[in-house]
Image (cartoon, rainbow, N blue to C red):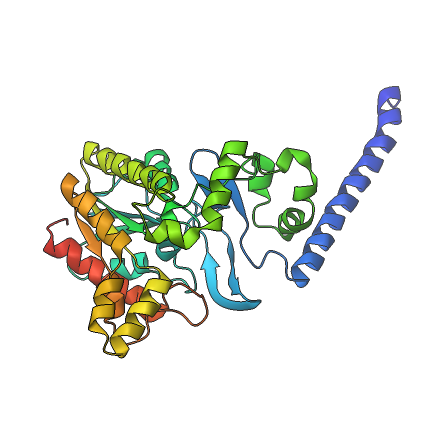
Length: 356
């Protein structure tokens, strides 16, 4: 004799099973349709409350500029670019952590052409070296400090290379609340999440980006006078932004030193500086070149020198390059030649200054 309970529940269980299968099939079909329409071709990102924006891990996609695919983009298990290594460092290995923004991340170039990857190639000819790329487009100096404190230091780097651009004095970008929750992390590589982020997330209050009135005012003031803030570090307008950036940089240097590591700060010129300098040089305007020599980079270099932190200013490197160092596809960023040029100069500086 069959159990009354089994007789009652079996049909219900079957119906629920059918519904579950149909739901799974519907989701799979929707995922395929969305992928066919171009979703999930650009990797999705989330906001890590401790660090800032990061990509969901283990994604394959593209970088797009003006609607055109300009490079491939693969994220590793940490949500950054390049190889990952075991946290425990092998004996005899020199480990370098590269912190920075889009220059370090490698906007506009595919895997293998970012400066940290080229740096590993150049240094690997003489030693066993591991170079980790913790760069992310949009990071400022505070993000870079947080990235070291909450992630990069766990890998015990022997050397930390901080790549600094003028954008690093910008206020830290506010992130999307709860985007680091487990369900979103599980869906991080899907077209479904990409479609949700593009079309629905901003309609749901719990996911609205939040900033205080003070933060908003600080950000808007920067956005209204970006060049003035970047190029005149000692002006009244620029001083609060530069003070915050330099404070974070000094805290980062102190943390690296306390951990027994060594530091190299690399100063990347802005695209508008490079264009102006190369134009003045081509015109034979020596006085103009001298006048345009990046004051902001000099200011940082002087402050770091007073603290005994090695600093590499690459303004001349880009100005004197035999080829155009900037990309045709990613405005404001180096091309393949430019990133290799950066890596060569950084490799030479690390060796010449005894940091390896």
